[in-house]
Structure formats: C-alpha cells, structure tokens
Amino acid sequence: QVQLVEFGGGLVQPGGSLRLSCAASGSIFSFNVMGWYRQAPGKERELVAQIINGGIKKYADSVKGRFTISGDNAKNTVYLQMNSLKPEDTAVYYCNADFRYWGQGTLVTVSE
Image (tube, rainbow, N blue to C red; front, top):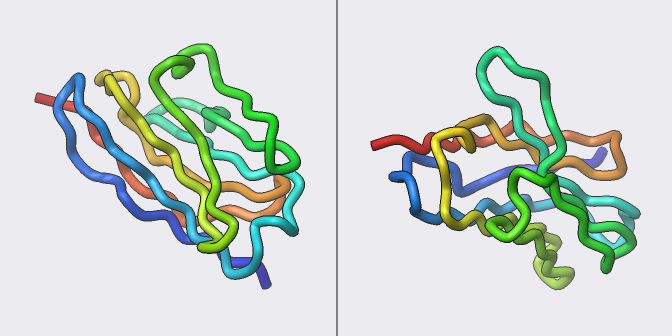
C-alpha cells in the first residue's frame, strides 16, 4: 500500500515563500511521475508541477518561475518550493504518484 504524506502548508503573506514536502512510503524511484496538484475553494483540482522519470519537470503556466519541484531519492521525498506567493495560490495542495496515489493534502493560505 502506497502512502503519501504532505507537510509544510500554512499561512503566509503575499510575496512570501513556503516549501511543501511529500514523503512516500517507498522509493520515489519506483514511480514514473510524481506531481503536486491543488484545489482552491469552489474550483476543480489542477496540476501545479510534475517530475517525470526523475528528470523532466513541468509546471502550470500560473506558477512558472515561482515554484520549483524537486525530489530527494534518499529521503523518498518530493518537494515543492513556492516563492513570490499570491493570494490566488491559496488552495489545498496534494501530492500524487503515477496518477493513482494521493496524499491527504495540506492547506496553503496566502493572505495579509
């Protein structure tokens, strides 16, 4: 049974930074695609960033240049570094593996 656990959400002011972590129960090497998604109130879940086959990185246009996805295989953890945060980044952020497994989500609130 694959388990993904997210950490690092919280309240931050506009322009601030947060780093989210996603700890996997097994090696992240075993997954072809690791991704971060988010769901804002009243909106559908959307893709934020992906790592494909451990190397190729893709980002939603809305976060390009501000967010960075990375992985630490030794710690079985995937990170999402979020800089220059905006109020519209407020959402529950979810970790995903191979489009099958989901974490429980962590809330990010960007507000004064």
